[in-house]
Image 1: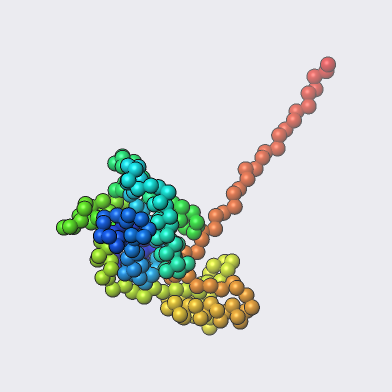
Image 2: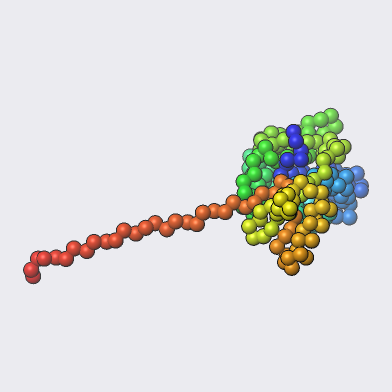
Length: 252
């Protein structure tokens, strides 16, 4: 698996992105929640196009966790990761409150993953293959795990899987960037050299320099994995055939 080519990272919430100060299995509230910064740091290094959080929250349906208290916690995690990782990567998420194993959105079913992938593809104007996705979780069927829900979710969806502890200790390659120009979004060429496969610092300096040189804000940098949106062909209106009107020659 070449992790540097993964465009979407699906990731679990509890014991993957967050843990608890009280050592309880699930946070008793926002005050009991700790962000797992080693995971945050690795995601920032990887810098995929999107990090999409998928979480089972059956405790809401059972009345153990009030939904109105869980939602701010979930939004806090999304906002924290978005701010930390930067805005070249979209951070979003979804959660399922149902305990019905037949519910398509409850993991290891793949409804949440399918819907988030579909929405992201619509946003960027491109299709992403499942082979270009990665799922990270803590329920990997390993000794000491509570089960293998996360692993089975990845298998059912059809993408690669990493246990979060393995992910934390991986040596990740440095993310590369390219400079593009709006509105066509083509890679910029300077001195017959395409401005791609750059470090973050190189890409940032190039974009700033080009904007200053041309007195514009048309230049920016994106991940090397970023894809130019597919331009849909304009809809062809059906041609209407002329209607022949026959004049009646019958005398009244």
